[in-house]
Length: 167
Image: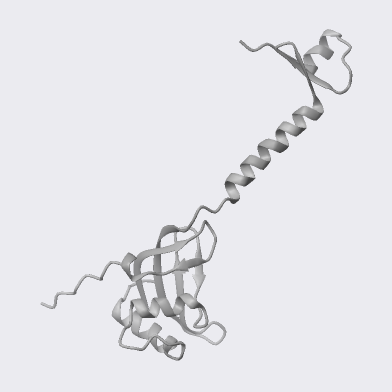
């Protein structure tokens, strides 16, 4: 059983404690410096747990291409989206070529074909929605933690799209 007397109770009862004394727990005097040190240690343990990077984690993701009409943001875009994050993928990004290799869409996976590949992807995997011309496919990526950029995009994680039946 733990017995504890806080400083506020001792002050209310008229006890004269030194200023550095915070409380008495099981007959042991605890100072404010000890309490602050315990808090610092607890914070350090918590930060070490939060910031520890154990290794890559598989996350559910969408490859999404869409066309935006207009001058400022107009053109074809490619996003890699998870539940909490999304990344705009450029041709210079290394993962763009991995995505192109996974879904060739009849084009060589080189940066020069990236714009045409986005159009071909939207045609191969169409998705109705807000944008009239868009394509989307669900699968898996590897990244270290929430908010970090995707590390790896592997075709083994992506299920093959269902074949359409033509009646």
